[in-house]
Figure 1: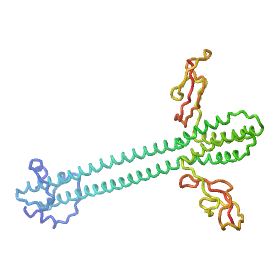
Figure 2: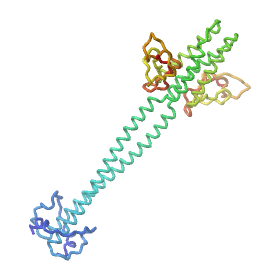
Figure 3: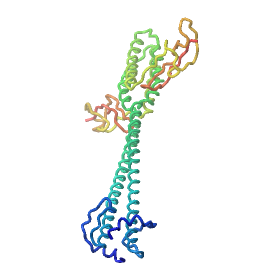
Figure 4: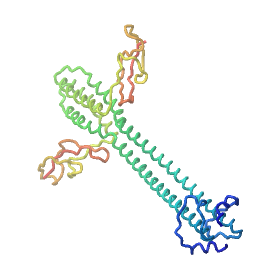
Length: 190
Length: 190
């Protein structure tokens, strides 16, 4: 029986993998039986190895998903943090507009001048609070018209200035950090 | 050779698992050789099965971590969203305080009255914008003192009112949704 292993390769039987090799009914000739068992074991081993490979691949995929979701969450968190005040700041823009309009009065009495001075301080503290959260005025007057941050609502002509230059601001525009919150409404030189 | 499987249990040899069963030198008696190979296969199968079990456990743990991190991120996102305006609102509280102080003037001329009226509209639009983001005034005057939302800065005595009741608000307090942004500074009845 020393040739057992060498003979194995010669037997090319279709091996049905059984759950319990020990219970296989052995009705064929001796050498064949031994090789069949080996082949059955090999099939079981191959089957297990395939399952293991599958499992390892499944793990790698999940690991990759895991890393992706972690990275995406990090980016989402950073963006949410960066623009967290966007809604409130957008709602404050008309408040600031009205504030500026209300402060454009000409004070003729000392009483009025004193009130306006007090209100101007409130206005400045409001602007400071919004600047702290990243609100910035968009530069417009005298700048080259930029459709990314300016909205042209009319054209005018000033022959002393370059064509395409912003002549007047009709409504202030604002950025929240690198995002345009509201473009400046402008008149542009023809 | 039909008793092969029955005999297997009787042979209690210390089987050294070899990488290549086919190359094992077979020098012992026939039945024993066959059983040794089986045992070697069984050892390999057990080893692979153990690896597979490990891998499945590893996968389950990673899956659980994955679900946890997803759940936690969801909660983080909801909290960040809920209180997103907290910093700006905190910075706006002194602005609102100063606004209210500035509006407490007695207008003696028509000009002043007109300006104050315009500014009051700006004030109301500011308050509306903050309310939209969840800012609410904490009730204080006449309420039972509540250390969660009130900060007692002095005691006074009003025998006509219950002990422990808030007599006066010295500075307004605010909630952001269910969070105390600033407690109301109050005087409490002795």
